[in-house]
Image (cartoon, rainbow, N blue to C red; front, top):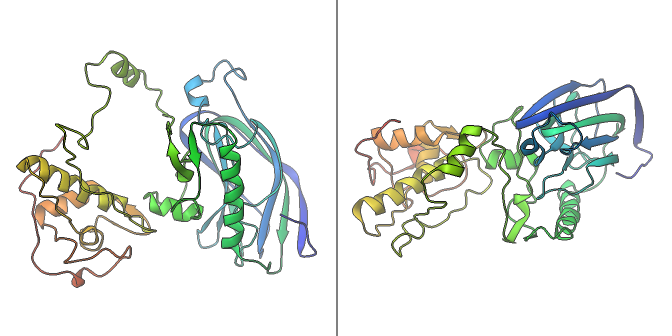
Length: 343
């Protein structure tokens, strides 16, 4: 973030400091601020992401995904990514010990923010210190979308320099904002950690998503179980029983697509033939009361709706990636699930 006449600097009387250990499922902490009525925010500080040698009590499995994000949350609960860093093999854009200056990933240009807090989201183990704020108290000229595209291009370049085994590039997800990615994945607003490990930039190659699980029971089953190492209905008995991949766009409706996709596949398997239904995700989104675009939802509730009410096909209620009125669909459902087994 280039210092200009509109940018002011405030050194914190007391450094914001946060240290965390072995957070396998993520954690967050909120820090209040005294700044008001700003149009941009950048931060100076230091982050140290611990490796296994830093502390003997740290679980090495928790170290693999050590990461930190700083999120600005404004007066309307809107979320903007200020800074992120990770030593995950997939997203290690910087050294584990990083001095950062004037960082403002999505906060270089902001609408008027009257009051805000900073939420720190972490996985693994590490320590963060925030020492200085840079902020604008007048509107900042520029296009935030164009700026984000330039920042992402730099991230893609850095990823491709690391010989990760996969190719990074621009995707339908990479240029979305942090808040848009959370909605897309059905992660509600608030202190829920979103850690994609760089997968939003994946264009090809072998991408190994690091597991956060350190449950000894899970590891024992993996090591000693009699189950096959992998299984997919996409290639079983020489047939692909799964219906086609679909695009949910910018709506947080993955739960609706999961429910319809599972129902389509099970129908093929039950009848042992390719009926390949194309069920209406919009029906699940608009009529099941299982969720919405903004906050996400629950696939099991959508499946209950298919059981009690039924679901129409795509031609009856085409998908628009918006929370349409249920009254817009046709009357008769295409299928209805006859029963279910609870487990």
